[in-house]
Image (cartoon, rainbow, N blue to C red; front, side, top):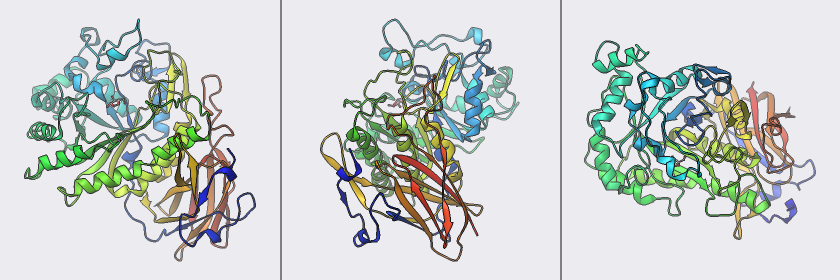
Length: 536
Ligand code: AHR
């Protein structure tokens, strides 16, 4: 479909006439920035990760074993560790996911040869002839070693569905009790780590409305209150309660209302974090990960991804009815694209592994921009899942390893971490786009901006099929002195990086002109662009 076939409507009354036509040098989008009025800080934990004992995420993806021929550090895939360091991965959520509510942490400690084999929740979905039996080779100590090597904070999901509060407290004690204090600390030392892990982030269950216990919201509220009653406080815990399945049709508003109502009167028991799961879920449709067959498939995914904005708004409002001061912040600890059972980039036993294309990179970029615009509401977010799974940054099988286009978005957007959000107004026509059924409207250019140490980072996405001339204008006395830009795009919407062609989709420098106090550039079609501006 050509751009001109896309119906366009004026997004902002009265501004349409400001803009020239597409194709010439005329500006089609004006971005007004107010760097002298920065708002909330973007928590670096928004760029967090999620890894689960599922298919090839842990085994082979991350853990290759100490005796492996594959380059490794203490059994951990070296290229993965290096790349996670490179993007400054701030945290890792583990061990699940659905796996977490069947996981008993004691099975994963002690001498490797003595660890038992246990059942894995994902067994039922494994292809014929394969199994998901958990060997427990990768347990608490191996996970902590990974976090240390990467420089990431651990975020542990405790078992609420099939364990007791005592089991949870013992895991906290095992991880955090000072050396020589509890017997649990002695046991940790005997297993190789004398010093405590000082784990701050604890998830109290996972999807307790589903695989984590099939509970009703009021039942989970009762469990939550019980589970947090005696959490050892060696390291002040940041407790995360299970939140809704935001990608269901009704956004699962009943869960949020029911859970927070269930906390009424429980003084001081409001969770620090409230988990929100939002998958751009295309499982019931013919949309596959590895092909972007037409414009409708391209826009449908991006359009649905952008609903994250409303999901955040609506649940935030519902939470505020009980948590009036908004002490609880979102921990969006599972987000990403989930396609119809596609052809797998890896063998079928790498359950849920998907191809990642340019479309998924753009989706990630748009999602980060939404997170930034809601920075005051979000304490953390974790892409699902980092390697060999749904919205992955990496694919690995044996000695083959590749960064997907999604990796590059994490790398390009790093400048936003810990920046203060800069108010931004986009003046551009919105566009009406084809979807799987009918049409819908979406922004023709969207983005966010943040300021850190005098440097402004502006990220912009252009999902359309024509280049978009944009001009950044700056309110206030400070004006841009210098600007650099890089962009991620490809001629083909379905372009991917493969083991054979690992550099097919990668960022390239983009020209950014600074003149008369403004920055002008031409956003390529179907692109994500980051502009770094040094203010005078
Ligand atoms: O990320 C895959 C699965 O999706 C997780 O295990 C579960 O929490 C969610 O339903």
